[in-house]
Length: 328
Length: 279
Image (tube, rainbow over all chains, first blue to last red; front, side):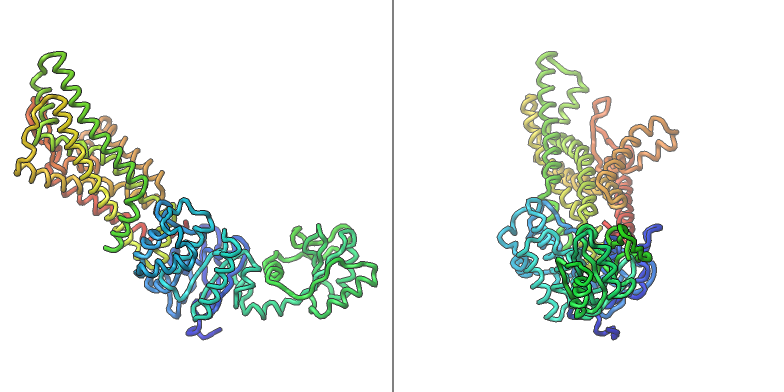
């Protein structure tokens, strides 16, 4: 992932402030060609700011961007002829039909044929309603049209900010299949989403940002494999005892209570040690009502983007938890 | 060119376009019908009207003078309505985020800014022609109600003059509305644009009464007054004679109006070119 020729998109030490607010604090992204890249981060992490920089809507304070192998600082607008973007919510003319929206936007940037407009209406499932005013559309239909606008120029690089917003399950599956097919054909898709299971199903590579910096980036399989976790659910009153037992097995600082109300505990140890954890709990008279081994994107995301935990206070009744603001 | 044609496509079916046109047509038509009715009532009650009033009514309702009256009213109403319309239409490029989409597609910002105004200019031209045609018909109806002769509406030399003045009125409308366009583009908001324009309009009316003479003189060259003067319209004077209605010589006024048009488009283009589009 270092040869820039194979990168559809890269940023180096990208910085952007809005007044006193630091939006990006030195972002280094590397998005290879021909993949679906999951661009993840909590609210305010800098995802949308990054998208705006990548499309020339705003200018970076410092750092560099490379789009499709070419340097880009916003002034090389013709590079965007090969880039499609849906940033935040779909921006459309509400009084126009879907077809007219596509024709009007098709007259900007790289010119688009009427045949392409019809093709896209078919692709996003709006052909039957193509003549209706957009103001009469549901949010999901507007989202589909926004995706069609992003794809007008048959882009080599597609940037989608929360594209599954408002889509029904059929729409989400269709979107997933479409994006995978695009990647398979050599195009690159960067998708920002909060629907992590969805990203997990379609992304080849993920990058996780927080506070304007990249925390981790790499093939999804490798990242998940590196995040060995065993999750255990016990009765809430047994949380403290289970915490102590699991800490003995996993070691200090490797156990966290993710949801204190329902008493899920997570031990950061290899998945094949799940039986060992279960046995230790049983020996202590604690019987787990749930036990899972392995990892998922949501856990990885929460682990990487959570605030740094303070030292553990394993006193009874004071069990730390990620989502309670205190952690082990 | 493609961009401007696409712009016409996006503006032509807007509710604001249709409502603005209907309001302008209704106001002009109503004005002439009411003038006809007033004249008829006046002559019925006083048997004769004064010479001055008679000259004014003749000018308003008898061709070819009625062409000037129709154009004056169409320009006056379209000037205000068109200004609000242009501010509304251009401000929505920001509020709807459609400018963002165009820029993200690699569209040149200044070309988009100029082409969008060109599209609005075309819509204004169509609006002017329709309002003028409706006004001419209304003047004929008003004259008929008043019992005045229609005059000579087909005088070739007068018609040529009317066409020239229509063209000047269109340029004047564009010069006038370009101010609203620039304000909407700079403030990125329909409401801010309309508020600024109304504020300016009020100041331009009140200002001359409160300010020193040399400042009053400058007010003649501000968009509202100079645009009206650039059309080169005639109007009945207090003595009843038909004279120029312009405070500034029409050709000079036209040049100043074009200067405002170019200046406002320049300001709008430079602003959009440099703007950080975050909406």
